[in-house]
Image 1 (tube, helix red, strand yellow):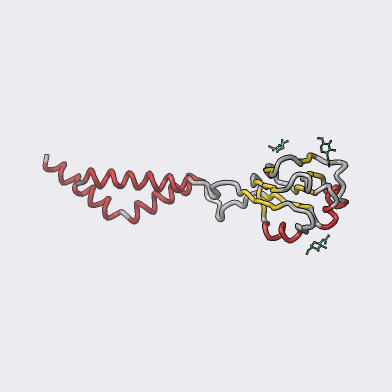
Image 2 (spheres, helix red, strand yellow):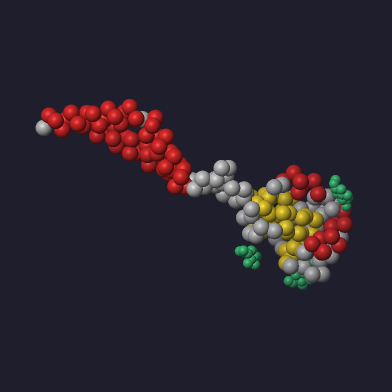
Length: 168
Ligand SMILES: *[C@@H]1O[C@H](CO)[C@@H](O)[C@H](O)[C@H]1NC(C)=O
Ligand SMILES: *[C@@H]1O[C@H](CO)[C@@H](O)[C@H](O)[C@H]1NC(C)=O
Ligand SMILES: *[C@@H]1O[C@H](CO)[C@@H](O)[C@H](O)[C@H]1NC(C)=O
């Protein structure tokens, strides 16, 4: 009886500790974009903001109708692909990870950029949880909360153990 209570309490503590150790955000987001001519993506960027570092942009496009060219800010503003950082035009889709905290610029080099087929995407740092406790603080808090809410049980168990000890 007492042994069962004690091991149940130990299991509960393990679960609490495991929960406290979970990171605030499980995984990076994957944001799909239907990348097609004659589209103005200004509102798309607004609707899908904020973007965070490590998010993935997945472009779906038709080869021959559109390409995805990563440029710098000047290239973005001028719709100019001559100083392209990289370009992608094969297959049907292309996944790009925003692996740094900065603004990324993409255009289509087929002339549609002037109509709005371009993206300026600011990859932000993940906001810290508020208030930002360390994992060990949270574990300690969880254990303290557990102990206070189960104080009666723990006290009773201790009393039973003491009584058993006196009997032997
Ligand atoms: C894309 O890259 C290829 C070679 O990597 C280059 O020949 C081509 O001119 C580039 N296109 C654009 C639009 O930058
Ligand atoms: C981000 O990805 C690019 C392209 O794959 C790579 O060149 C760069 O080194 C990466 N940056 C970091 C911080 O991993
Ligand atoms: C794209 O849409 C935005 C917001 O609606 C607008 O300000 C901008 O002028 C448009 N761009 C073009 C090239 O039509």
